[in-house]
Length: 269
Image (cartoon, rainbow, N blue to C red):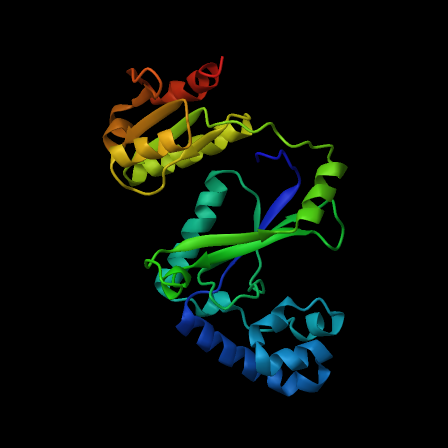
């Protein structure tokens, strides 16, 4: 959104957890074993090294042999399925186009649950601009806390090619105009959707997703040098109001929720 690229689609899948992948890999192995001699040379190598990578193959022969392959979505636990449905629901809520692709697995073993790629219709067959996924245990493995995170990689050359074809230029760097501090699940969903709408209007805004106290959110807002903090809790949602705090003057005022989409752009004047 910040670059202004168009014609983008998110390709999304869930690879579940370790137990889910283990059961799926065994099912995929049972399916492909009778077809082994028909697979491409690369896929025959991957059969014993990294079974899931066979699903990434672009070889026409492999694509044909995989046509009736089992889907990992049918192996997800109830919790994993609910999580994936929630992710898809949020994308729909934000009007972000996406396509579910059960063969999308990504190449890194530490991914779990959500994996994704971002594609464009402007680059032909080589249409992937980047991709990534969620990993719950990687940070702890590296000596850090047990903290679920999301990472992704981007093909810079393809992004630049897409920008050139769409006549898009890099935006000027600046600081966020507003920083949303949601307090509660309903407030988080509301701020998440409002942030997306404002970004479509080219309003630079950020959101605190840590779920911590107001003071933590204000510290983050000051850290990123935002001009305003907008505090919305579940109680504010129920009472149809939000608090706008000027981080320079420290002045605060309440405003109806429905007026935020009009008021916030005016703060930039």
